[in-house]
Image (tube, rainbow, N blue to C red; front, side, top):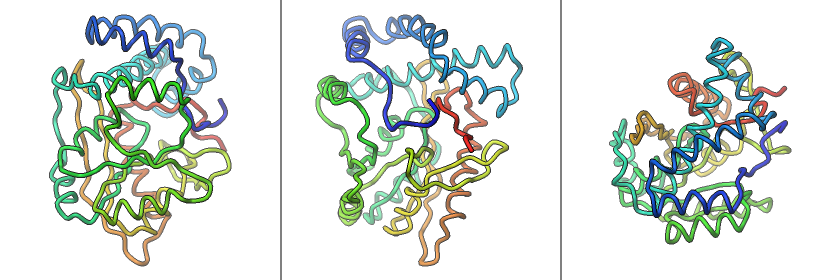
Length: 290
């Protein structure tokens, strides 16, 4: 695809198969089946495969053979993150280990009861970050495009036994801004990605991985308008069943906050994480499209 379309791929049958394996056979058999599913996408998803291959060749400067291998591994890591998400949200979190890098930052923000905004990206597994944040006595609200098919969303909710967080859908009438403001007034946490935009949304070019790329201005305009403390969070997989959680020191928004400077700071932090864990960069379109 030429740009991100605001929704993810997947079929109800595929979700049901993996959910059934997780329930009755466990985590590792699901990973084994995943290796064959990944091979299909590796061979036949020409558009997304081409884009992620060019990411490894042009941005990470890997050789041809290594880039090809990294494409397969990237698909496999994406599949694992989806399986792990279902496992963790359905009560199997004891199967995983984790380590926190900056949990004191989340604890400080939650204790202040002022509300907080967590900016993430399509890197790693954001549900892992949410799993950490939920430990600190705060209600989590997730801002997202309502692009998932309704039948898949219903299936996932039935698997995890109800929502573990509140969803604030992005609307053209800007009603999501009022919902966010009310949530922050209650001292709650808002999580959102800040690395993708849909066609027609406002975006600005920022230097990223050696070349200018378009990033959405919306998340940063919201942070500036709502004047809530904010930080960057990531959850990345570093072992078969081990995750590392990262939370940067909280930042304050002043009256004269500059959107460009806020975006540059976020993108620089994201670039460091991408260089650290390139196999978990899950953007399958022309991210550097002019």
